Each structure stands twice: as C-alpha cells, then as structure tokens.
View (spheres, rainbow, N blue to C red):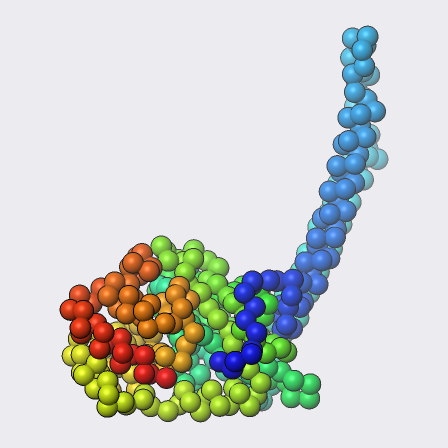
Length: 322
Ligand code: CUA
C-alpha cells in the first residue's frame, strides 16, 4: 500500500464512497425518516391519551366504553398498507438499480471465495491470486473503473460486506453471486463476513485497498512476479518446502502448490495475517506458525510443532515474500 493513503478504521455505512453504498444510504434515510415519523405520531398520541384521560383522584367510575367505528378501522387498515407499499417500492427500486448495472468493457473482474475463515481473491484476467486484501482501482471522472465481484464459497455460507462500498451479498456454496463496487476515493476500507460461519466468523475480515489507477497497475505488476528467491533465507525455504506447509499453501516458483489455505507468494506485501486478525509483523508471523489457535482459536491451520530455530528460519523466509 502507498504511504499516506488513509485507512478508514470504522466500517461506516453512513460515509459511502461507492455507488451501491450511496444508494443504500439514501434508502436508509428515506426508510428511517418514515419510520421515525410513525414513531413520533404513535408515541405522541399514546402520550397524549395517557395524560389526558388518566384516572383522577375521586373518580371511581369506568369511563364510557365505545365500540366500533367503520371509518376509523378503515383508516387504520388502509394507511399502514399504503406505508408498507411505499417502503416496499423504494426498497425494490434500490435493489433493481444496483443489480441492473451491466459491467462496462473495462470493468475489473474479481472472484472472491469465502473460506472458513479467510477470503481467497482471484483476478482471472490478470493472473493474480491473493488473500484477504482486495486491491481495486478508484474510479475517476472520465475513467470509470468499477470492480465486479463473483462471490463463491469453498465450505459454508459467508457474506461479503464492506459498508462504505456496497451492501451485503451472501456467499453461498455451489453457486455464484454477483455484486459490484465503484469506489471514488483512495484509501483502505474495512469489511467483514456478515453471515455466521463458525467459531472465527468475527475474525473473517476483509480489507479493500482502493488505489489510483497508476498505483493499482504497479500493484498488479508486483503481484504477477514469481516469489522473491533470496539466497540468505534458503534454509528457511527448504524447511517450508519439506513440511506440511506445501500441502495447503502455494508460493509461485516453488514446490508449494496447495490451495486449501491462502496463497503466500506475496505474503509479506500484505498489511495483516490471519484474515485481518493480526498485523503482519515478524513476531506475529512467527507466533502464527507456532500456534495459529493462540491468535485465532478454532483456525483450521494446525500448529506446525517446529523447533524454535526452524521456526525462526521459516518465519524469516516468509517475511521476504514481498
Ligand atoms: Cu464467513 Cu462469517
């Protein structure tokens, strides 16, 4: 990521920077306004009746009991039906507007695969595979560059949600859902799996890094390169290639071709590890390999049970994978 590019630490649906999220905020204000108005009217009438007709000292008779008014019953049936109809139409219009968007010719296509508990990110047209940190270009006036997402799941139902960029879309096994984002501001926006998917659901975080088109092109360029092969950490690489790491993880240019866990080819270029559960520092990386469940209880990666010196060398190797 570029130094100086802001990280927005709060996933805030009231500060949209992308068309679908802006449409959802507008809809929220309309529905919130109507609902708030109903609350005020009903609450006000209730309060007025309760004070105006309360029992007063010395009164011990029942008030007159009045039954049946066709007009009033008609009114309080029809008015709510009309209100619900308006709420329904406004919602349906927003859903339609968001879903009707057709990808323009230069739209970016990304496939996002939900796993327990991390996000696999593939750019089929660019030959890039990464995890948990989705990089996309910003749309600038005159050069719209929306990103269309194909959402798939490797196991259970997850849900894609980056409040500043788009509404929630479920990520369902054996089916492909589509959504899109079109950020107009650079920066990092935080997202979160929004469908309970097991013990580490709350730690299934997603970062969306929005970059200027030039920065995005540079990022793609760097991600397409094979993994760094630094002779100073050759012993760490040998440990990596001779342990079970390779059955789950891939590092382009090595024997590691596993696909069960995140691709590690450019691991060190990411801000976080463990799907956003920890910052990507050498100490955290070492602690993660030593015992992932100390950081993410229930994580599916087993503790590698390596002696301390091997752990050091392995972590040193992974830290070079920029
Ligand atoms: Cu994935 Cu909750």
